[in-house]
Length: 217
Image: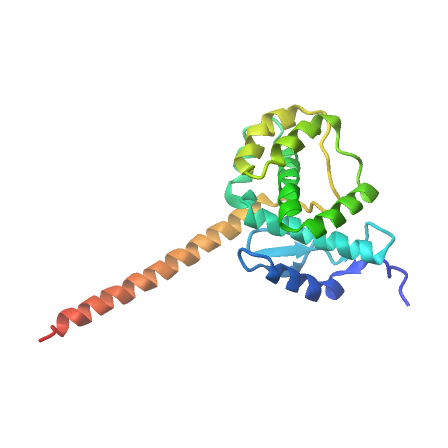
């Protein structure tokens, strides 16, 4: 009998969460085990063990909330920019990246509230248990990003103000942002699309030559 029975193990929860991800709209995402919780737009990576709470069900729900937030990044535009490039415009790129990620987490949490209200209630319940309250200075950001039409551009527009804020919220379910992995996956996707296009063009050219060689009488 194991003592870490309250922790949610990747191998136990992956089949259930894999089905959950399949049921969500957007690009098909593989679920993989890795060093932390993150996504590159092609896969969702989770750590081997999620054990922020002493309660097994809470840890499972936390893993599900994390997966939903990572899925939301792929669905609602978080990954469509070069994050490292944006962060490099600031004196402290790491600080800028952390704050952009916090802004996006607020925006995506509001999207989940609309798309998956049951899961959102569970997320709020866990955040009340596990995370400090949202700093006062961030409440205006939350209000702005809760608007149903808020996009990544709104988060970027608030980044200067968030960068200046003394504190930055962090949630147990937010995972992390991996600009290098995101950029690599985007480049691989473009290469794949280019290769597909080349094949398609070659086929069309072939077809054209064949038709030229056999004029219809």
